[in-house]
Image 1 (cartoon, helix red, strand yellow):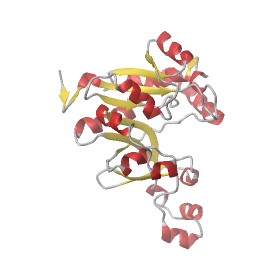
Image 2: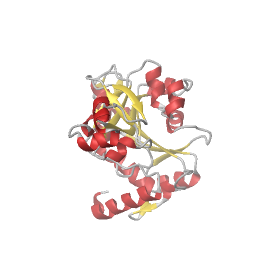
Image 3: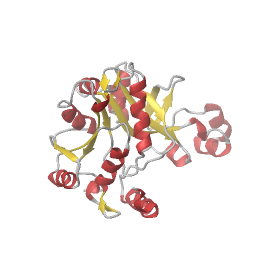
Length: 271
């Protein structure tokens, strides 16, 4: 058996937190896309990742549980009281073998690329000092820089997160002074948009770190920005950020859903 540090190769487990309730698009994980519920697309993409050994749907909803099981996926019923996806996957991870690598794949990302998952997992396999990794992608639309719904991340020279924010970071002060505001600066400065990276919601944890992290109290910056990954940084831990070229779409609204539906219809059998 191949081993990587303290992580036996057979213990790389993708857990997909899957709530039925959603404020902006109720029941979205069971909405039909190309003939099957959205959650099955996400689980199927995770299963395609070559370094994933198990895919588990973690849900508090019997309907999602049944759909997953009936279509050949592992599923686990979890508490309805969890405040976040991280808490939900931690409940499942507690029952997993020690030293497992746990991958948090957001249930509402039916287009997530298997290679994105693979690259994030590999970053932990290669470096035993890394306890948590996530992904980012280039921002190509000025609207995404300005939107508080798109989380931005700044990264140090070693590939670790400096900060995550809903605000535009970094802030190009001289360009803004020259053009009057950030939007004009981004429109007129050729290389300004290249400064920005969009944080995407995939996380990879060492199991023991995940269990410790989810027991820690919420921190001030986390509560201010409503970004739970800031709890990791505020407690002095590093987050490896892996840049990927394949973009994904989180389905939060009906508009997101229709956009994904059109992409899947165009792609045909590929998903």
